[in-house]
Each structure stands twice: as structure tokens, then as C-alpha cells.
Length: 159
Image (cartoon, rainbow, N blue to C red):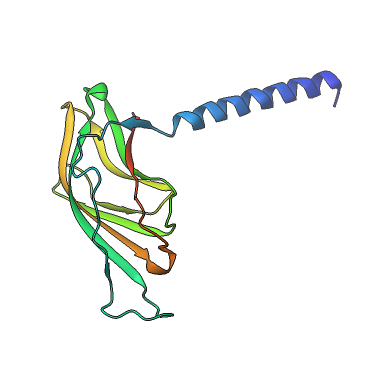
């Protein structure tokens, strides 16, 4: 392959790589204002899944639930279509399972740290999306070193 052909091939590859990086950056979604969600700083009362766990037992899971009033400000996307996700970033205590049920405006689901789950898809027809959500968390007690906060947020991808 000649030097000119190599430069053209390399240039085409770099352009393709830049387009891929730009498309990937846009795939993360835009942050949705969920500051109206109550209780915003929910304290979970964790209990053992089994009545009397023992050291080395197969089930050292702690579970907890809380009721949330989810209030999402989606006014910037009014009259547009999109997909809204609940996002659980990677965070201590590591492996935990979050699941929720809803009253029907948002979709129920399950997720683990480092992932996101679809909670709404369709046209945004009101400036706010609201729902009552029963949020449940399960985690391995062996990984829980201290009181920890579970952070999550909502993102939207426009169609």
C-alpha cells in the first residue's frame, strides 16, 4: 500500500472513530430534574431476609423498602417523545439489587449498580411526570461496612 493510500485509509479511520465517539457521548442521556421526588433522602430500614442469618450462611441478605413520590420535571421535553431511565451509578456497598413497583405512570423494574432501566417511553404531554413508587433494596450484609447512601437519578433520551 502506498503512503498516500495509507494516509487516506488512516484519515477515514480517524473520521469514523470521531463519529463513533460523538455518537457514544450522546447516548448517555440528559439529566432529568427529580428534585421534587419525596422523600429525597429516604432512609431504608434494613432487615434480614432470613430470620436468623449465621456467619457463612448462604443468605446474608439485608432487605429494605420505602415509598417515594416521584416527581420529574420534564418541561424541557414537552411535546417531544423520549425514553426516561432510572440510573443507579456504581457505588458502595457494591453489589445490590434495586427493584420497584409503580402505580402505573412509570414502568416497574429492577437494576443493579452501573446500569439503567427504562421507566417511561412515549410522548411528553405534561410538564411533570409523577407516580407513587415502592422502592426495594437487597444487599449482601458481608459487604456493608458502614452507613451508606444509595444515589440514583433519572435520564432522558429524546427520540
